[in-house]
Image (tube, rainbow, N blue to C red; front, side):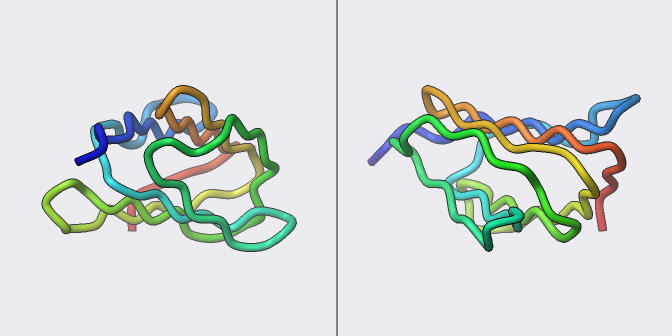
Length: 87
């Protein structure tokens, strides 16, 4: 089994959520993207929408994220948004 992703969802002034996950789905300005372990390095601009984090056990954490970016490198996914909150 692949090692889990290390995920952080951060708003301008605070961390919204962080932990390990098996998948992250986010809406970018170019469309929806899914990130799994082993994904190529990526930097994408976020569109307004949900970021869905699937935890290793199968449950999900969803955050609403507005204006920001998503970066992927070495199985670490960082979502930085001007505003973000769990929904």
